[in-house]
Length: 320
Ligand code: CP
Image (cartoon, rainbow, N blue to C red):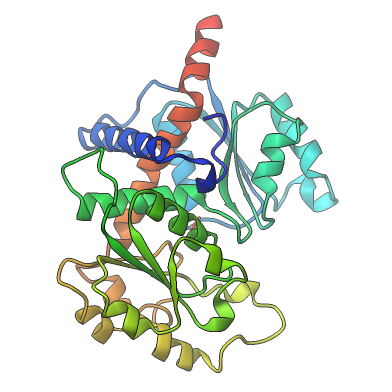
């Protein structure tokens, strides 16, 4: 792998290989080996054009636990606010010695452009681009699912599992990446959303689509993944009758969660709208693995950086 841009670029073997490395990273952390020397001498730049809590901090933690240096660069307070282009920003980062660039952007395709425009040579990691993909989020979700539902075999896929993904699919890069990755790993996926929040073209995705949450939840899901309703991306008015109506029809209430199979787990990529798409009591219940997803994010991002940088970083360090 040269870059980590989209789940659609991965084979099943590559995805399983990253998950296996993430298990190894988790194992080192559980044995209190907080810092590995793997990326000594490497510099990872976090280039965030959009706000982030989990992704930015976990990439920073991941890089530091591999002994890389980290430069955090956010659009606010940078020359981007003076109109500097993505190309000139990229050239500046390269001149500063970046060995890899982790990029989040509101524009779909930004990470792909950075990787393939020929401006810089460094590996690019997509930390979320518009409504397109959020591949490391899907990897951490698969990692978390596997630990709960296929424990004991670090090479297992997710074959035969049923995952229901619910909510604002239209604006969700998490939904698209998860549909692609979970099905690549053998799971069956059902997307549930109001008709207005299903993207045009989703009928070609490798999953079922339903407008009826209760019907989907009656189909024995092993996991339910709730999506954040992205109000900030809904310009120009409402998309469903009322927020109360949305919660009533598509919210994961205490009653709905109680009716799930006993072993089923609940995920949410965060940040959550508690009491809207998910009841606070469900988010805090024993079924919820939402906090664990955040911890998984560090292991998965360590694995991604390892796969992209480990050899190059070791060679560069030896030359110095
Ligand atoms: N899940 C996720 O991408 O969260 P952040 O926006 O906080 O990074």
